[in-house]
Structures are given as C-alpha cells and as structure tokens.
Image 1 (cartoon, rainbow, N blue to C red):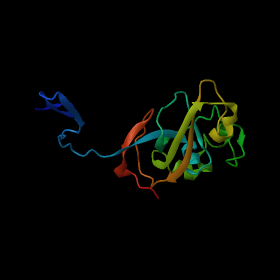
Image 2 (tube, rainbow, N blue to C red):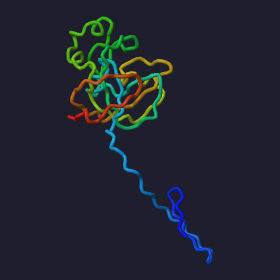
Image 3 (cartoon, helix red, strand yellow):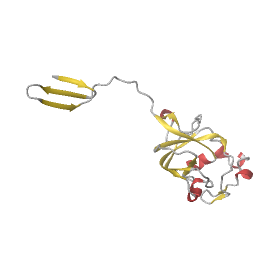
Image 4 (cartoon, helix red, strand yellow):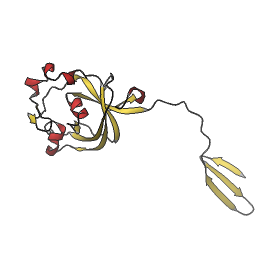
Length: 180
C-alpha cells in the first residue's frame, strides 16, 4: 500500500505491521519566473552621496529593521533640512552647517545635486540597534531619542539610474541595477 500525504510517501505492509515513512517532495507546478527584486531605501541628499563615498556608514531611522544583506541606496529628490546635523564632521572633511552653506545653496555641492532621484550604491546592512551618542560621527547627525542605527559596510557603487523613491524599504527590479 502506498499513500501520499503532504510531502511524504507512506509505505506499509499490514501483515507484518511494518511501516516506512519516506520524505520526498511531490512534484510542484511550474511557476513563471519573477524578476528578482532588491530592497531599496531612499536617503535624502547629501547623505545618500556620503554613503556612496563611504563617508557615512550609519544611517539613522526612527524605526528598526530586521532586514540584513544588500540594500540599494537611492538619493531622494529633496535635500535634507539640516535640523539634526552636526556643525562639523571631521570624517567628511566639510562643514555641515547645512542651513547657511548647502541645504539652501546647491551650487556649493553640484555633484550631490546632480544625483537626486537616482540609485547610487548597494550597501550591506549588517546590524540595526538603538542609536548611541558614539554613532554621531559615522551617522553624520546628532544623537536623537528613539533613533535606530542601521550599520552599513561593503559599499558598491552602481550606475546612476532614475528610481522613484518611497518611504520605508521598498523593492526595485535588479534588472535596472548595474554594479560598477
């Protein structure tokens, strides 16, 4: 006697009371291939470019994520308002007095302005934990209550292509992305 139930075949002999359960998958219906999707995150400028250049290795959010692995960094259409930025970050080597110098004046940083609304790089998101004051320099912003630090490494630039950003993590077909 042979019976199939879930992904197991049960073979039994009633006279000898010997039952053998064998795991073996049942044939699946063929599925259409879906394009592979890469998780993406919109980051306002100039911070998206700082991530691309490896100058910013912590992104902060007010929500944690369980995602680990590749994350496409996309530059937002708008610029950051500069409210929580440090007055100076030595790691970046430029003044971050954003209100007076570059949040209102794109001409000072044309390379960052030209990449708004585009995919910039792929980063490996390897950890997420509550932000501490020690994260300020790598995050390029002041510590703020309730913030989560998203730790990034292995930054790989990609060909800049237009991407319509969204809030939170969203997905982009990987056919649009070319690693340089």
